[in-house]
Image 1 (cartoon, one colour):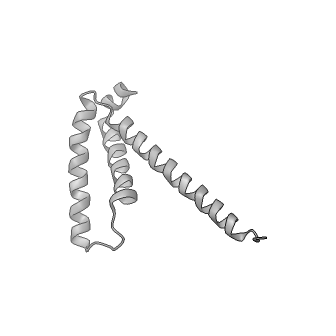
Image 2 (tube, rainbow, N blue to C red):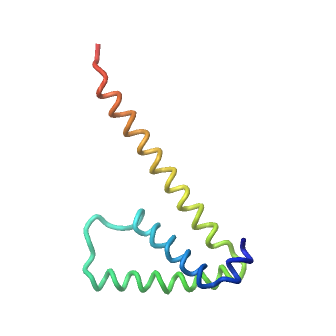
Image 3 (cartoon, rainbow, N blue to C red):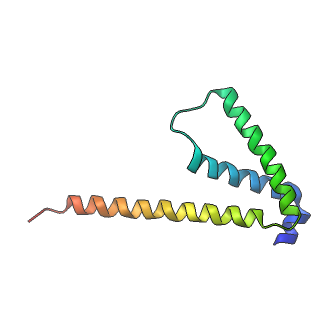
Length: 97
């Protein structure tokens, strides 16, 4: 898999950028919206950072795999919160005797 990503740098770059954008939006984004120019600057900087990570990916470091693990862990946390909220609502809905 590592060799395939190294031989397809455009696809690797897009995957890295999408994963970084997802991690930013789910973990680091503030509740309020940023002004448009700051938002544009932020995505430009993420694109530059993705280019640097692409160099590391091509140089045989498992950047994409590490980002996939981070996204998987974030999804597991979201599932855990969902299950806890369901259990909390279920326990509150039960009549107390």
